[in-house]
Every structure is written in structure tokens, then in C-alpha cells.
Length: 383
Image 1 (cartoon, rainbow, N blue to C red):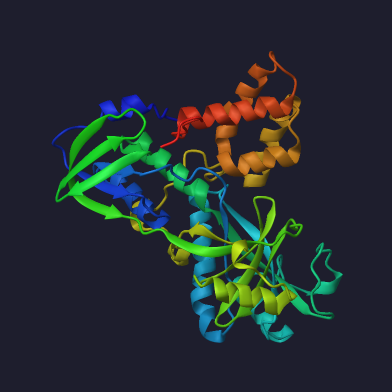
Image 2 (image 1 turned 45 degrees about the vertical axis):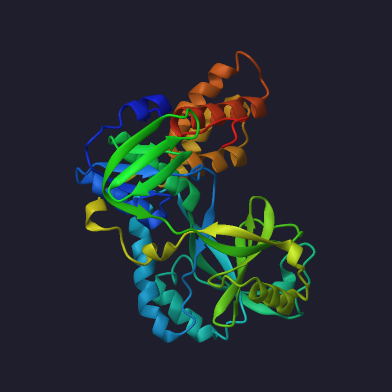
């Protein structure tokens, strides 16, 4: 692990040497930057404000709604296993309950077989009215099925790739004003006021995509998400950040989202309930990682060729539980920080000399870790 000392990073920016520069990159662009630095290129990654650092678990749909979609989704399912080797703690299976698909039992059995689910993860038909979903009144006798899909922690994957680029000598900075003039790029540090001019061999800017999202004001349910086809798209109800939130898979139109919610559960949404959520294009997971990333894995990925992630996590918890942290609390942190939890646990034991309150201990541990290794600027700074 390499510390993200801001002053040191600025001092090491070399004048007159062309950089491959990425500004506010999306996940797919950041992976290209990683491949470039692994190939020996000079890489610079800049964020005009802060970079993603928190959990952002985004589901990856895998259910083929038509037979024409089957080959592509089978390939996608296999590709996800390769991505999971790169970042094993940031890819997790998730149960998705699909409603109103029109898929028969026989066809679902074929889908399970093609996906390799028929032995250990076969889909199960469910009566939605029998599921304990607080405050949600679905139409009686509505049936659906539970189907195994994947989710990826996009926020943490972006952060970990930034750390990998930094480790290999790339320049990674947040809170930088970027002024582009041809091949000349002027950088202004919003924190210190430092200013530098660098030469760009190439410049790539990310294009932020925002989609409407509605916080439902209902109790979320753990362990699964719900998805319903709607106008060549699908409505998702998902537990994120401890809240039940509704969004669409593709559409950026709030009216489409509101219509889908009204049709499914009869809830009318006001415009004041809408907000925008930054989303990344995760189509890159349709294919395996590029050849330049073949065999690469994050330095904090728990099981590069070793035991399953769950086994590594349980062993790590056994070591840390004397600090007072619960299994569920530790699991959430482990699937965020991976094997970095080893050093964080050591820090937690040191802090037990000052307090036995595990919530205080682990809040201090995570904040200090982010300050030291993740470009975190504690308040009261405001750019």
C-alpha cells in the first residue's frame, strides 16, 4: 500500500514529460488508464472534485428475456467470473426476484441449465405475497422467480484502481481545477493553491451520466432486489445505503420511472421525490478484461488463487472480533476494503488502549485509513 501524500504527489509531477491524462474518468476509462500504466506509459488521473470512495453496489442483469439474448448473456456470465478474479471482494452474487416476465417453468429450466445454475443455484418460483416486504402491497397471487445474478461495487472499484495506478507511479489527484489548451494542461490545486502546467500526449474526459432515482420511504429488504420489465426497460427496487430505492435499468426519464412505480404498486410519485444518481456504464463486464489486464488482480483482492472470499473473510473476522466489532459490521467493511482489513484490525487493537467502544474505534480506523491511502480530505474543507 502506498500513501497518498498530496504534497508529495504534486512535487513529483514532472515538467515537460507528456502524460496520458484522464479527467473525471468513468470506470471503463479508468481501466484503460490502468492498462496503460501497466504497459509503461506515463498516466495522470484527475478529478475536478472528489473521487468515488463509498460503496456503490450496482446490479448486473443476467436474465435473458428473449431467446436471442441467451448467447450474449451466457458469455457475459462467464466473463464475470474473470472480472471477479481481478477484484474478488467487489463482485458478489445477488438474488433477483423477477416479476411479470412471461417466462414459463420449462423455459426457466433451460435458462438455468445454460447458465450452469441447474445443479447448485436453480431458480425458485415464489409467491410474492408470501414474502415479508414491509409496507408494500403487491397484487394478490403475483408470482415471480428468484434468479441468481451479480452485483459490483463500482464506487470501490474506481477507488482501488486509482490506488493501483498511484502505486505504479501514476499521478492521481482529486480537487484539481483543469484548464485544457491544446496539448497544454494547467492544473490548479483547490486545496493548497499550487499550480502547474503539464504536457498532454492524450486527454480523455469522462461524461457523467445521471439517472432519476426515488427513495421510496419504505423499509428495505436485505438479501435480494426486485426487477420488473417495463416498456423495453425494467424497474428496479433495491436496498442501497439502508434505503429502498427505485430506478430504471436504462431510462433517464423521471416520468417513465414514475409510471412504472405507479403501475406496480399504485404509488404516485411527486416531482419533489426525484433525485439524480450518477451511474457508470457497466457494459464493459459483458466481455472479459482486456489482454493487458489478463492475470491482474487488485492488491487488496482476498483470494488470488487461494480459498474463497468468504473463508478469507471469516478467518479475518476471527482475528478482529476481540475489538468488539460484530460479524455483520466486519463483513460490510471487508467487502469494501478487502485484505486492507488486516492492517486496519491491527490499528483497531492499538486504539483499544484508549477506548473499548468498538464504534468509536472502527470509525477512527476507517477515517485514518481513508486519509492515509485514499486521498480523503476531512472536513471542514469545502472546495
